[in-house]
Image (tube, rainbow, N blue to C red; front, side):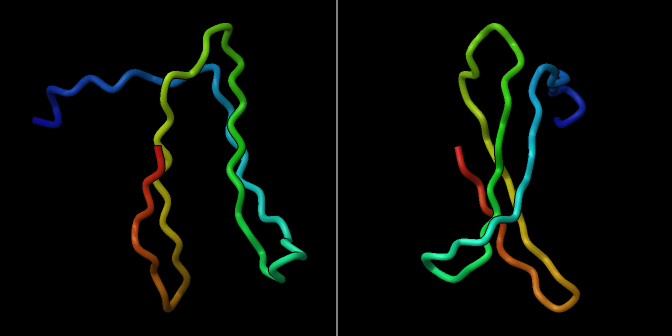
Length: 64
């Protein structure tokens, strides 16, 4: 059950999502930057994203 799963609070990690122009492909791309402010290495990161507008919705994208 979901109520039985303990999800710890994440601390010491900062995230920035930046929209940048790609002149080579003439597109606008989104980049995700993670800063680890801890003294230990990050073992794994899972990024889940989904794009949407007033008329369109993209599928869910998961990247490990």
